[in-house]
Image (tube, rainbow, N blue to C red):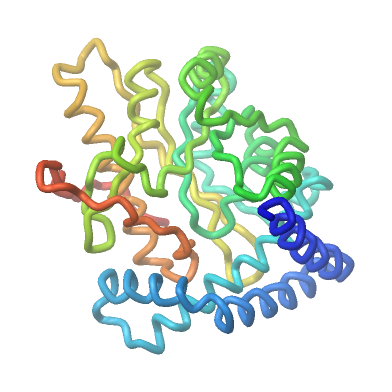
Length: 316
């Protein structure tokens, strides 16, 4: 029964992708966004309620209409992203030059690390179009990216996505292989990319995020401690003209020879990430992926809620 459900789901999605992929790129994005926006607002009522609950806490100053607009935009962005994702297989330097601009200081810092064969840790978030980060970064900076991913529940969709993700050389690392494979990649001077804004379960640190405690992944900070690799916070934001701006914020690295308290150091770097992520979300609320059940894991009475701190990193 589950296999049949997966086949039906993927057949429907693949049909939409095929049809809208036949249209010119910009028109296909607009129409696919309209379809997913309508589907989400018409049928995904449970998701809408959960998203609205989070938005009311995160943005008490917003009207209900403003929050509904953000929810609709979240569904529409799924459609835009799907059509954009289809371009990855044929992406080249000319396509990147046409549709992308890069924050120059961070991009040059990545190029320098690549030249010097120093590993990098990319901390990604589900903002803008995160799926359009790896290939453009590879083309623009020469970096080889190892992307840490969890398999999708639908195996047909998972195979399709993974094949395209690999199309320009991105290496995929699954959770059970993270430790040794990430350290080997960093030792080769490559990048390991973590999407760190999802629920981390009981293994995460509980840090206030958007007004309530959220279990937060610490992977990037842990691997910086183990390897000395520099951490970069990277987003790929949509621009009003249909282009993207890839923003790269160097966040420093951990020299474990100078660290007196490993746990406190990892907490600090994780707090830096949460701080800059929330600033981005508050500046661009229409570009965040509000569909995640970010607060699924609730803190127990014995769990520490780590106080937030404000850092100097600012969104562009």
